[in-house]
Length: 289
Image 1 (tube, one colour):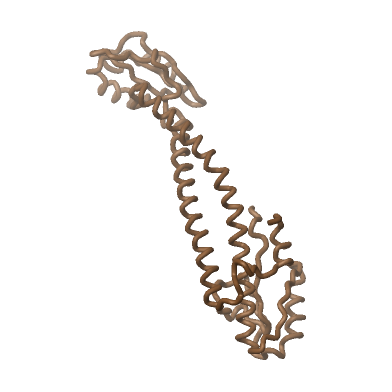
Image 2 (cartoon, helix red, strand yellow):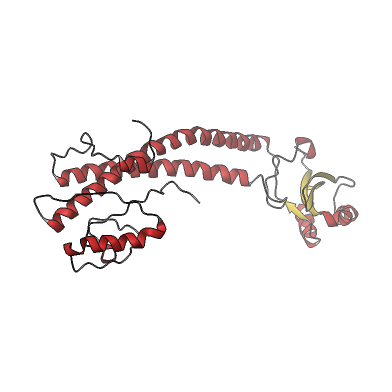
């Protein structure tokens, strides 16, 4: 089928006999439409849920690698050589120090608690506000050191160097990123195809409603003409007045009250009742702000 825009499809509209056989009852035709649109809706929910879950997991992992040194992941900053590993007595802590407190840190870190290895601190990384320093001390002094560091506005990060975990996190990030790219293309193609299918069904429902409401209002045999009108915004009120003058004899009880939107369902609300059958078709469905 040739790709055409929404307005062109509507202005060239012809009932699709293959999809919606007119020899069937109105009830059967409505059920065919309802089943088709419900299937699209269910598929959309399932596909959107799967994609959004994947996207959310990826964003959650990505967020860990951004932000300041107090909150972000340190896995992509530190190296194995920054740590004392496999020692029964010694360990390495990572401390976030405000840039304005660098001199204080250098003067005091060795005496914040007992058993701190002299001259063991090293600046590993810094961002706009803070620096990440390593410091080596005896394991039994960890709690005391953390408390004294906090009192001096030096924040010890809770971090254990584990190559396997860090590798697994990187692989997970890569996998999620790849899966997201793989799903995005097919999802967009599915949306394009099924938007068209849903829009076609929607216009057929509009045509069905025009027919049904016209028969209910004006009776049998069928004697009415459906047409499309597309006034500019400034001419909507004038058009309403002209249509009211032309067709007020069809229903003297109808009063012109502009309706802000099309109401779903087969029954017209009082707010959009005119002496003629009227349904709004919004062709700006793809206009995003």
